[in-house]
Amino acid sequence: MGVIVNFTAWTVNGLGSDWRDPIPIHTITDTAITFFAEHQNDPVDASIIGTIDRITGDVDAGIKVSGSSGKVSMLYSLKCKPGAWG
Image: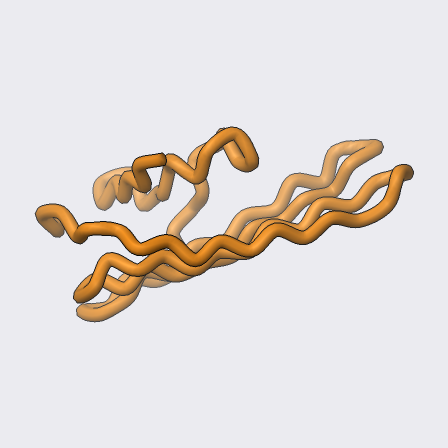
């Protein structure tokens, strides 16, 4: 899994098959990137929220999915190597 931050498009990609679409970045600071997205498609609703530490490269994200079959929550805590930041 490789998390890619696109500073030009203000998106995050690479959280595997659990979230394939680009995720909009909400805020960028000197030390962190925050991202958030929602999908509200019948019969399934889903959301993702997370942060990337720009110093350590650590990524924390949560995905929630709900539908007629029930609800699922997935939490990610990734140790990534920070690349070249724009």
